[in-house]
Length: 493
Image (cartoon, rainbow, N blue to C red; front, side):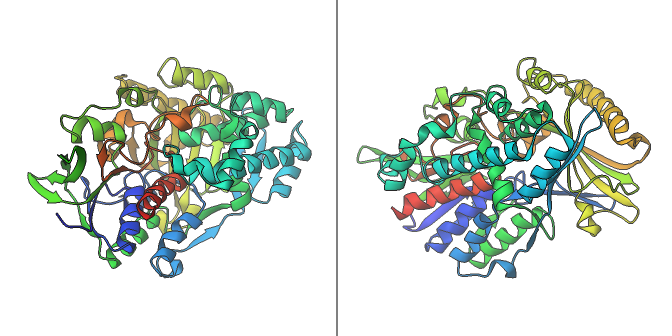
C-alpha cells in the first residue's frame, strides 16, 4: 500500500478542498466522482442560452477559498476573482414593504428605522450579539473537531467554554429575535437565517444568529464568473498540485482490514477495481457512506436516524425582459412564516404561500442570459423526500409561485418564461448523493445539534475521514471548507 496515498470519494467542494490540503502535504491524491463533473451541489446548468449556478448562490467568507491557494503558494487572483456586493438582499412583503439589506450596516439600520417600527439601535444591538456568538463559537465549534479531547486543550477554547451562555443556545431563534425587534417583519427577516442550514427558526437555537455576522461583517460577494467558478478554480489548483480526478467513477466500497487488533482503511473499490490508499476521505453524505460503502460494518444508527434538514424546489427560468426592482438576491416573504415552517416540518409538504428566493446572476454577469432576458433561479424551501407525490406538489407550487410573483412584483411571469428546468428533492438526491434530498445533512432543530453531527473521522477505522455538509461543522460553502480544514489539522497533529 502506498505510504502517502489519499483517496477522496466525491468531488464536492469539501472533497476538492481535502484533496488540495493532502496534496500540499505531499500525498499522492486521487478523487473519484460518480458524476461527469465536479462540484456536487456547487455545479452549473446551461440550456437555451442561459447559465445558472445549480445550487449555492450566496458567497460569504471568501477567505476560506483564498486560503487553499495560499497554502499551495499560489496567488488566488491568478485562479479566481470575486467582488464585494453593496447589497445582501432585497426583501418584499405582502403589505407592500420593500427593504434593501445593504452590506453597510449603518445604511441598513437607517433604512429599517425609516420604513418600519424597529429602529437602528435594534439592528446594531443584534449585530453585536451576532458578533459575540461568532467570537465564542468560531474556534471551538467551527474550526476544530468537537469529538477530540485535544480540541479542548487550548486556552481560547477554554475561554469560549466559559462564555458558552453567550451563544444563546437555550432559546429558539424566533424567540430571541422577538426580543430584539419590535417589528415582526424584521423578526421574520432575521428568522430567515435558519434556512441557511435547512432548519426551522421556531425550533432551532438562537446560536444560528451567528450567520448574519458573516454577511454584515465579512461581507457578501459574487464570483466574477459565477459560483461555479469556485469549483472550477479549485479543481484547476488541485490538478496543478498533481491531484488526479476520475469522473463517471462511482465508488462501491470502502475497503478496510484488521491489523494488530485495529481496523485500518485499505482503499476503495470502483468499477470492480481496488485502489489502495493510506487515507480515505468520504465527501459522500455520511448516510450513504455507511449504508452503501462500508460493508459488514455497524452504522451509528443514533446519528443516521436524526431528523434531516429541509430540501429545496428550484425552478431555473429563462425570463424575457429586465426587472430593475430586483437585484442579485431577492426574497418574497410568506404572509405567515410560522405556518410555512409548520407545513414543511410537521406536515412534510409545501406551504400554499411559500417564501420565494429569486437569484438573478445576469444582473452582474451579462453572459448568463441572452440579450433582453434574465436568468431567474427561483427557489422555495420544501421538506426532504419521504415519498410525497412530487409531481402534484410541483405543479401546485409552480402555480402558487407565479401567482405570488404577480401579486407582489406585478409581473405575470407565466407569460414571460422562455426556458425552464426543475430540480426537486428526488433529483437533488440522485445528482448529489444527499439522502432524501436534504441540503445540509441533519437539521439543527435543537440546541445540541452541533454536537450530534457526525465527526470528521472514524473512531473505529483508522485512516477513514468524512467531510462535507452532512458532517461537522455543517452545510454551506464556508462550513464545508472548514470540514476539510479540520481533517487537515488531524493529519498535522
